[in-house]
Image (cartoon, rainbow, N blue to C red):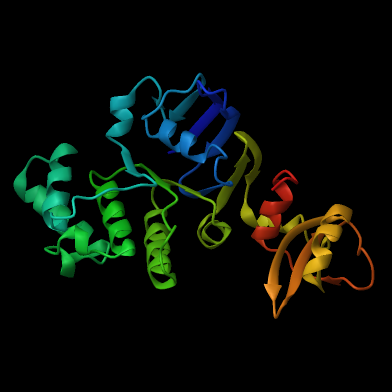
Length: 290
């Protein structure tokens, strides 16, 4: 099953153009949607999840018209929004059972089996009777995935899922998403480049509501081979260097600044070649103001 987006646009009453003629084809598997805060990612996610109407354009999930057949889409949809709230005094098993009823799993035995299986799959079964208010951030996110997987969805949308997670919880969460993405369409919206690099076979970059790139992460990285250079400079030199050439990333290293530059040729002998990363692609693709 493929998700097909054509000429999708949305402008808010404030005048903000959140989406500008977006065209995307998203196949089965993990698809990463990268962009800075305010890029339009959440607007696109809410539109795909049938929670918001665009001004124009079309979306199809297989043979289903997403904008015209919302109920049909919702039966195939699992959604983990950026701000996923839980009832802190309710335990995981009880709340998941309640959500299962809302998703149409009305037979008690079938529902009980589904809830137990999802709690096991998300490594929460041992904590099934723990109140959700006592869960860590990562456990809450895994509970969010469990509720999104109820009803055997064919399209799963997760919006900024790893923000605020510690490294161990983040890795556990990413492993879970990777396993899920083998069989269904999973759209992962994030501003964390590493999440897409580790998980996704295809990706898109958007900024200012515009689609800037769509394709395979490896292909995008390969396009910068032989064009990415590094140099260690004093912090005071950074702004001058940015004015002279395309600095795509920089970070502090032992009190100095390690910069990556994209250039068709070595800028000068003080620069050394470096293997490009998806982070270099990301910042190279974004407008220079970022």
